[in-house]
Image 1 (cartoon, rainbow, N blue to C red):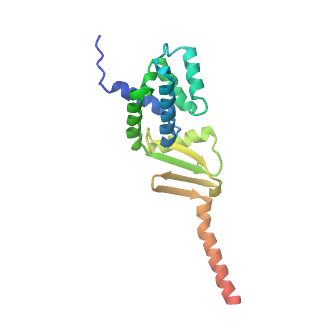
Image 2: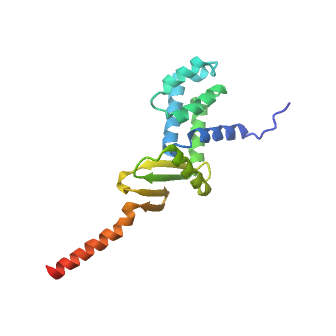
Image 3: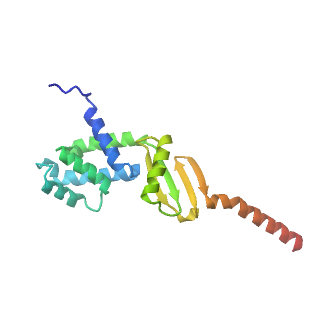
Length: 189
């Protein structure tokens, strides 16, 4: 039986799997981690060893990448090993994969949802679901904590920003109070 998939279907399947495994990572972090993985795998020569789907092989990969690769990207690398496709992250093929990822992710929007405190996972899931209406996958929705906003949230995407933080709401009130105080000080002063 002949494979009737498009010539780019294996690449599309691989990128889809990469997106699914790493959707929580920023593009910058993802590309940096892919770069580290390619360097480590290339210089170790592990891509030439088989069988890649074995427990021992995966343990060597884990040890090689431990501490420098997120569990999300490691999940994708394990998937590649299960397909005997680690060579995709090695030598010239690895450089081509990195170039492809760089071009692909250059256009992927990153939406930052910033709050004063960490949001529990179930709330993040609800927020992500709602943001996906405006920012469908493969857009990256990154959660950040910044105590300086006091309460509420800020959503940033490139140069656009929605600021519903207490800090933002208080700024006009503080300015008005300072202005009134300086006026009353000048009158009574």
